[in-house]
Length: 234
Image (cartoon, rainbow, N blue to C red; front, side, top):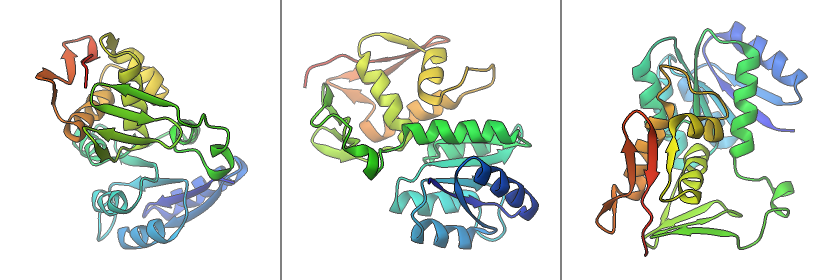
């Protein structure tokens, strides 16, 4: 059974979510402040963390920062509705997805399942992964079995969403991919008018891989359309 950690100071919400997630086949642990959240995340073996931004004491961003320095456990952040700043900061810090409050519990469940499908394969699944299958474009090499990424000979730590996004870009290197297509394939949802999630993830990838490769812009933004990964030799 997949293990979920909820970090939210709304005890009533945690109780409702815990009951719902259990009926969906998950085991759940809930804590109610940032300090407890950091301890639980680092000591527990969780498959995914649901993290609220507004927490007493240590806020959600600080919790996320601590988590990302220690592990790549998928994180879905809960933000105040309409607060784009919180959403963008969370994505840039390595959150795998976000959901504004108030939200539909079924939508959160759908987001959780989508993120888990993108996550690293568990021990029981890893034996079914193709051994040695790699994707190489220019100075970037992705091992699809181990989820390891190397750029110019140096290992690069990516979140599950960043890995999925890079995979799409490399598989279609030299071709323009629309924001709509990337949102659907990487995030598992349709692009809406004010959704800038993909842009945030592309920005994060640029920082981790470097903005240029062989004198060209690594990931080109085509205004109002989408993105194109430069097709170059090593």
